[in-house]
Image (cartoon, rainbow, N blue to C red; front, side):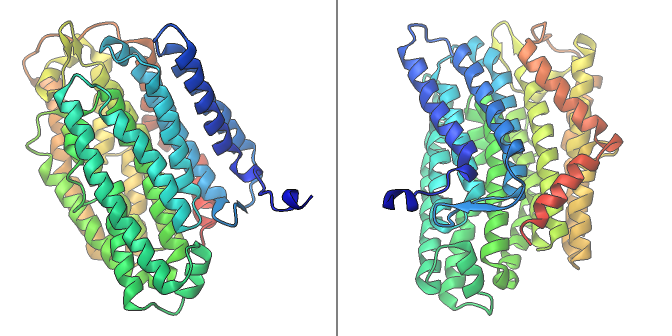
Length: 480
């Protein structure tokens, strides 16, 4: 009876429990099967994501906490978890045929993606510094292996090693900052920190916050802790790169938003300066550094750095409208990134996959529908109306202007103009350059399905935007 009284309420953590039990079951299934084919395990992982999504949608809408208030389930967490599941499920589905073609069709890959997704869920629902760190490490340890999954490739091994070394460094910085915050504030819970720091903080807490933000900047690949991103994106297998670009970025941004809004609202003047600098530096570096890139995966790496900068513009406002803009931008980013990497996965010739932008030359003549879809995605990434990328930027810029951050909004707009160059260059290569050797046809069904859904969402969002906007507003409102 006494043991039952201290048993935590497991209902708020039901999605995480489903993922944890499912990952163990898939691991055992893969180990005891004679065939090493990852297909059945991948299908099982996708089914697991669907079941988890259903559990999130059917959960009560009110906020609930468990495990001593260190875990929270609220509308914000539910919104972000659905985005993570969409990103993880889509990248896993569209990578099946590509992993098989590259002889990487091993059952450990889907299991690692499920475990990484579990870590992301923990990051999003963390209501204290210790729970946050547990989620980060669970996600990171799985992603280190995924990045180096192509063991016979020097580039993939290098990518995994760089990611591991720099990830360990950033985790140490984040943990050191968290320990300083705990030492000077006397608590690790977000609610306790919000109360203790409501009237300002000592210099020790501010120093701890700086280290904490540095560790966070690595996880979202914001300048000046972006240096791992291009090498890891280029070196990792393309399906793994698609996963790295979509789901973990969403989880890390959501984790940062919750930490700042719930634990450090009293230190907004301090962390707003850090976010302001990272937003300016990330948008500018993402705009200018990508201009000279010829590898499309490195181009997407610098593009992701730039998009993180735009997301931070919304966060820097520190308002409910800013967080709503961030959530809308994350949804747009997931759709655009998944669609673009689905196109990249189609860049195959008989000798194998190719990654150069020049290889896209003449694609409009060989595969006009694929060229049109990729052009739509490039227009959206550039922020050109009526595609979803335009509305995503509009909401974060509007939040910055309403908060009086006019300089930040102006810099963001100018960076968008510069960044449009390298997106439009891809379109120019496809439609106006002399044709290169055609890619393999037909496009695998898994890639075609994901590409169709992503392109439709990106193109038709403006027709009926209210479901996403209302959900994002409700999710953001739960933090204030």
